[in-house]
Amino acid sequence: MALGPFTKQEHLEIATLGLELACAETLGVLGGWWLDRHFNTLPWFTLAGGAAGFAAGMYMVVTGAHKAQAAAAGKLNKEKAEK
Amino acid sequence: MDVAEILSHHILDHHWGYTLGGVSLPITTHTVTLLSVSVIMLIGLYWIAKGGTSTLKRLLTAGAEEYVTFIRDGMVLPNMGQEGRRFLPYFCTLFLFILLTNLAGLIPNMKTATSNISVNAALALCSGGLIVFCGLKFHGIIGFLKGFVPSGTPGWLVPLIFPLEIISLIIKVCVLALRLFANMLAGHMVLISLLLMIFIIGNLSAVAGVGAAVPAMGLEIFMTLLELLVAFLQAYVFTLLTAIFAGSVIHTH
Image 1 (cartoon, rainbow over the protein chains, first blue to last red):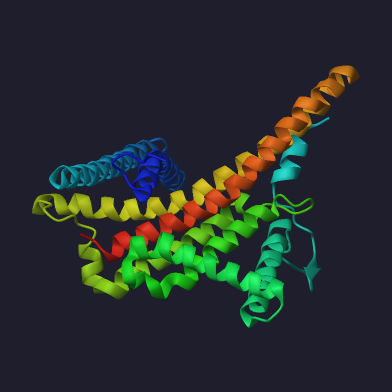
Image 2: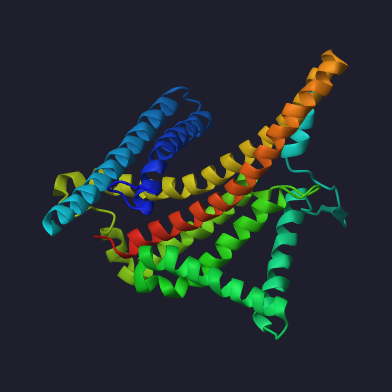
């Protein structure tokens, strides 16, 4: 099976990125909601948690994509040099 | 016919209601499945490890050796390097335990314990503990914490990147649990929904119900085979991702 410029492990890590974004967002909102219930400040912590979760999720997606791109570029450069 | 009740009865955990001296014992369908799998693994693997001269014993021993080689050469060594060799027993146990727990759900009257988020959270906590242990063992506390800041990060960005990287690791461990939970739960919901389709249509018209039984059973067989594949796939993905994360902590740059 053709895997393109990525290894099996890199494919798995790339496929995980979407779930990581969703999980970060959900954890942020739930954490904020718990704090809001605790301090009776609804909706401020929920909104802040949602924003923080989204930021963390996007950071993971961007760093993951950057890592995959660097790995693919490295592999392609190596193949070019071999030719 | 209460579809929601049948669905929840099929999927959710059931407390058996045993008490000892007024204390409620945690005997539930999922804990019984987990204990059964653990006992089968302990006795079965001990029996295989003891070895023997019969054809079956030699076949099983060869199978067990192939299995350990598959985990070592396919997951641990490519991702963790030689440092991962000492953690091989953990990965072998993890894969087999998840696989057998997933497969247990396909046996009538048994439940898929991995469709319970608490079970998966415990498994993910073990994997998270292993990842942190690897970082501390091979780099020390300072080195492990330094590994959370990518090389070349400007000094003023460190207070922002450092907590983000720690949160990333926590989320990655959470995602391990969530993926297994979602896949196993969804598969069993589809299985029971396909069966219920026959009775829902049968309630409207008996003839249509009989007619619906043929495609529904065909889909049911297909989905059961798919569940069999998913059971192997999810055990593989959980183990491989644990090895990848542990490897990324050991070889930080």
